[in-house]
Amino acid sequence: MPRIGSYADMESTWKLYPLANEAGEQIGAGDILVSQENEIPSPHAIYIGQPAHLTVPTHYHDNAQFQIFVEGGATLGRHNLRPVTVHFATHQTGYGPLVSGPQGLTYITLRLVTEFGAHYPDRPEERARMNPAIPRRQITQEVGSIGHGELQELKEPQVIPALGPEPGGLAAWVVRLAPGATLPAPAHPGGAGQFCTVTAGSLVVDGRQCERHAVVWVGPEEEHFSLCAGTDGAEVVVCQFPRNALCRAGDFGASKPLQ
Picture 1 (spheres, rainbow, N blue to C red):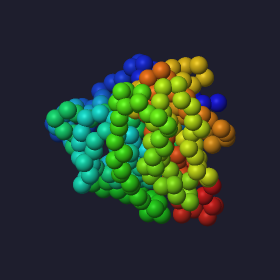
Picture 2 (cartoon, rainbow, N blue to C red; picture 1 turned 45 degrees about the horizontal axis):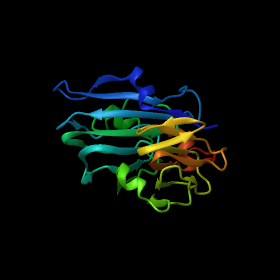
Picture 3 (cartoon, rainbow, N blue to C red; picture 1 turned 90 degrees about the vertical axis):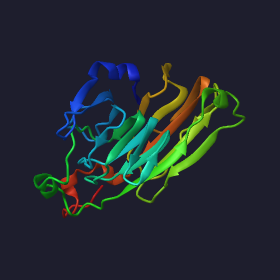
């Protein structure tokens, strides 16, 4: 069944983490949804608050991930980030630098496999551990956002493609619903599970009100999952992972086929 994580769930794990620089700068993060690290899949959703005018150096993670930029502004490499922007990176793909603007930056990181920490490819030992067989890739797409008033005025549901869909299962959509409206969640064959992130309004899932920044994990075994808007409508980013996101970084290039 779907798993739900909320902003309130995150508050108990919120803490400041030092960046890998000499200035002693810190970035805040907390787990909206977290799983046992030894499970696959082990869905993990992290809420991150980046202070104004702060630079997160180029780095990578061992697992594929989506990031949903929901508040503030920044640059990511050559891309300008504004709410709502969707970013996807494959295993061990370096991305950055991530430079927040005067309003700071809030974003939600989504992974199929629970992972903590980051690796910095400018360090020889961190670069040496990268698997050269991994097909490295990242995609950034701004999709925008609308407010409660506009959601309440919707005459029919909106389903806007953000990424893909691609043959390997990668896809993302923005879904906008009027108050009380219901729509089957968009899906593409061959995916490895989805995160549904509320970026405006609210969803109702299994009788629970999921407010802004809430995340719902829907495993690949789930069928006919429906998005049900709350009383003020809903804007939801649906992120579907490709099949190879379930593989560990070390499995790429191995003799056994990727599942």
